[in-house]
Image (tube, rainbow, N blue to C red):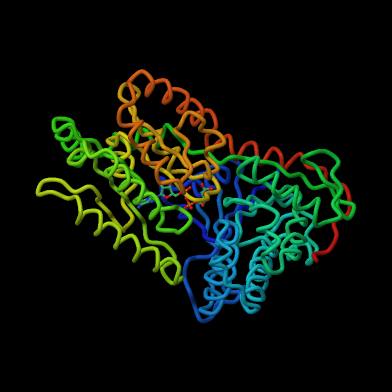
Length: 466
Ligand code: ADQ
């Protein structure tokens, strides 16, 4: 069996004992089991950032190959095409899309640079697994230079509906780039349907079965592979540090208080202002919870160089101030808002101590926080997950309270329903959710994806890139 070569925009830290985040954990485990190479941007911006300056380091049987970006590449490829064109449009925010020709040119050029960096290190039987929207053209750049490897692509974010995707300038080029892969993987069935509908309307691809197409003499598989977490590891983490939070929990229960928790990157796709408004609506509609319900929003800073992100931050600060100003008392505040990263053990513990996990993105490829919240619960006294129907996770987590994140009343009522939910119903829902999450974990995700990639028929000749 050949080595695995995983490529993502950023590499993780292979030397660290515990990787965090679904993508990093999944990739590191897969690499360690077969041996291989992880290629990605170092996170550094440098003046002499050409392909020949890539850094190669080896830990046990895994090699990490890091590429650095110039200031201009960071601006136009990463902040530009990836995060001002693809991220907003794939999350249905065409209003925030800012397309510029120089972004698209640089996006193609950085993908070429990734290909130039990788090619000298490839062996003939390597299996290449490319991750996410930053690297859509990578297979076509590799093929252009003669690579006949099996190359798979996995999209971590949603694939939008036909109308939305076809509004993205150069969508035809993106389509031709995607069709250079042997396997195109998505998070959900809904993403697969959107992509297949788009291909039927906008390409000559021939469908041999619902998940197999023939295009320019090549077979291409399409499938959904919902990403999972290591539920056991996360649950263990929720018991690792105490940090006075248990004391807080006891105090709260004595005061008949409970906590509602959310943790997200501070991103407009996560629906933070809508969620705060729903919590305000809950307090307006059910004043008996004044002095009792506490909402903790942990928002990690993200892409602060993009204006839309600065705007959302300002809006949240204003909303928190307004709600607290209206309702807070001397010994109680309705909203606690933390705008920084916190250690994962602490996050896990906070999830365990919160009666309600309020996870209401406006769009999300999957949403790992929803799964982590469930993994952190105690079986005897489990909390309740309220989940947006527009998170990919909603396709699997049917026992959550599923809500429309745009409907403030509906979310407010779901908070009320959770607050009075009988213990028996909480346990039944939790039992079903934890089985789902434990059975469909990070390991299964990578095993199923890699098995599908290994089984794609690749005997037909590869065409050159578009
Ligand atoms: P993200 O948009 O980053 O991922 P998500 O899946 O929720 O979203 O993962 C975020 C991770 O960061 C979680 O592991 C969470 O615990 C952690 N995190 C969030 N806030 C934090 C904080 N303040 N401090 C510390 N840790 C924090 C993208 C897609 C998702 C998809 C994943 C994986 O947008 O839809 O689920 O990739 O495929």
